[in-house]
Structure formats: C-alpha cells, structure tokens
Length: 267
Image (cartoon, rainbow, N blue to C red; front, side, top):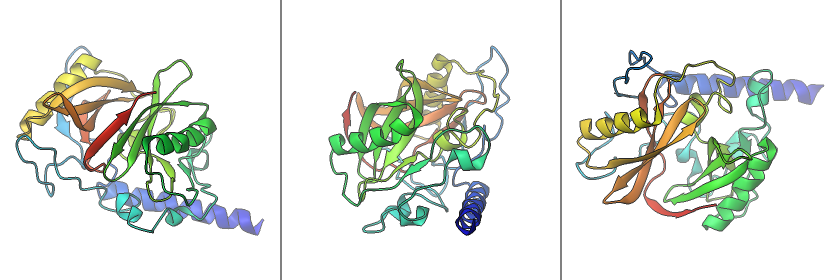
C-alpha cells in the first residue's frame, strides 16, 4: 500500500511537471491556437508554440537550429551519461494508463544500460516498446541527437511516433505532436477532434509555413497519424528533418529536437 501511494504521488508530480511544460510552450496544446478552420476550407498555416519563430535561428536554405523543449523532460536531459533516470528508475512505470481511464500502454520504456548506436539497435528497442501497444515498427531514422521510429498498426497504418535515446536505449513517445495531438496514443486519448485538413492541404500548409520562415526546404508527403500529419522536410530532394500539421486546426509544429539528419531504415 505504501508503494502504491508513493507511485501515485510520483505520477501526480509528473503530471504537474508536464502541465508546467505546456504552460511554458515546451509541448504546446491539444490543437493549439485555432486557425479558423472550417470544413471544406484550407486553414491558415500558423506556428505552434515550439516552432522556430523566436529564439531559434532560421537561415534561408537551412534547417532551423534545434532548440528542444524549454522545460520538463527532453533531449537536454539526455546529455552524456544522464540516461533516463529522471523518469523514475528502472521500472519506467508512468504512462497513458496512469493519466486517465482506458488509455493504453506506457509512454516510456526504461533503457537497458547499453548504448543504441545503430539503426538496427534502435529498431530493436523501438520493437520492445511497440510490443507493449500491440504495434509494429515502420521507418526508423537516425539523427545527431536521437533515433526516431514510426509505430504502425498491424495493417500498416501510422499509429504514433517514438524517440530512442542513444545513451541507454530508453524509448519514449515523442514529445510535441505525438504527445499532444495524437488522439489514440497521446495525452488527449479519445478526444473527438474533427478532421478538417486533408493530406494535400497539410502538405500545402507545411510548404507555406516553410516559405513564410524564409526557408528553402520543401515539404514531403504527409503521413496521417491520429489527429495530425507528419511530413519530412526536404533539401535538394534529401531528408533534412520533419514537421507536423494538426488535422483539425492546421497548426504547424516543427520538430526542433532531432538535430542533424543522418540515415533512414525502412521496415
């Protein structure tokens, strides 16, 4: 009973920490600022609180400098040797199931203590996490700060996105859109946001956003996740990074936390 109360207190503290992060613009909000979207009409593109508008340099023809969340948990806590101990030791027990009823699986899988330095090693760790949710791993990408993996349903539809810590192999639901906008696996699990933005509109919105920020990157093909789309950003036909577009509001969220793109492994 004492352990149960202690764990409940830990979860409450984490929930408060996440709330503080949202207030500071580290994770944004569910749907974010409304863009005045209406059915049949393309919403006006707008930047999310963490998009590289201020405090992040954007040079024409170059990917914005990664900034990461402003508070809470994130890549800044993944500095050399830090591992993932800030998430509660080896158990990694906090997750959607503790944030509300009927939510599935965990948001975080503790590291093994061994580094994940290759795409194959990152895929193995992502698979261990995906198995908890009854999902499978699709695309895996390597960046200078982390590994990224797309999780899919059994029939191959995009379900959510995760990050793998190179230092110790810890896996977590990706902060940003996967945490705040995903209506099946995020913090707002089960929300009924209406899809007003088509895939083609999402790509157009993303391209306008890139141009508006003096960037010569182009928007790739949209991947439809529950509640949003994620697109690669391209430089001269090659992947440079990614951004997401909210499927209800058209809000844009640039993924500033990855660092420099290195390589991709398809399923």
